[in-house]
Picture 1 (cartoon, rainbow, N blue to C red):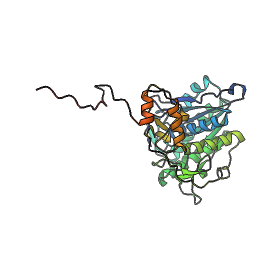
Picture 2 (cartoon, rainbow, N blue to C red):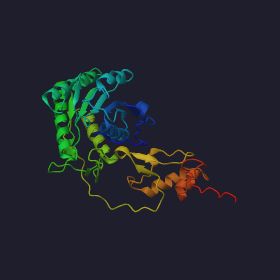
Picture 3 (cartoon, rainbow, N blue to C red):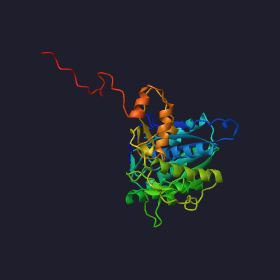
Picture 4 (tube, rainbow, N blue to C red):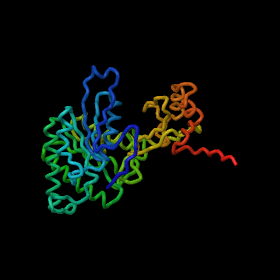
Length: 342
């Protein structure tokens, strides 16, 4: 499986194979006891990290760092070897908790020298368990509490069956090492056990949680993932995903907003891609997205308009929807050239 990356404001992949992202400290946090959390994963795990970061920021007692590689897994260490990379990640910083969500890319053969093991055969299982043990041993050396998060349900039945097989192996090895396996599948299934693209988010409001590909999560889905993991961290154990579900609220009426310029759009894992002028800083809390994720769009727009300098390009963009013309000769300069003199 290959997920298509996009440049995002809150979850930036960039060109590096793995990337760290840390929530900015809040004023006064220095006097509080912060729990340092490291999230490791593939593309789906990166989404979990973004959701857990937001949940941790809202709580105020959690400092979340994300390290993920979109195409990584355990079946192909020649592509990205987590067991080899982990000591390097952990040597410069210490963490109280480590959350892991890896495996969405592992439905493929494993190479062992000149041998090739087909997915889920006995040889494949033995090799996969050995690779999982390598990662778990590296995690154990950190001294942190480890929560290995189950792979979420997938829309495609065959793919989902493969992910359940992978998760079962991860669960067995994690628990054999005395660590916690957090099964979050039930939180993203319908009552009949089938795949659910919608469900209660972290506030209890029923919304669409999963992407069109049947694999990724929108921002609200990542928030729900983060909420489940944060509940486990707080309790020190793996909560039941069903009983941990927030009280469900009926969807409210659609928010009526004025016709305003579109300043952003939803990108990778439901995160925000923001379009903004260069002469003003717009904080993440004042982002107006085309996806309708902001409930009071008018208030956000008013706040943005109030903070931009008068007469600036930002004022024109956010007040009238007028962007400055592209510099002459740039690729997006579509001005009609003057007619040549006869």
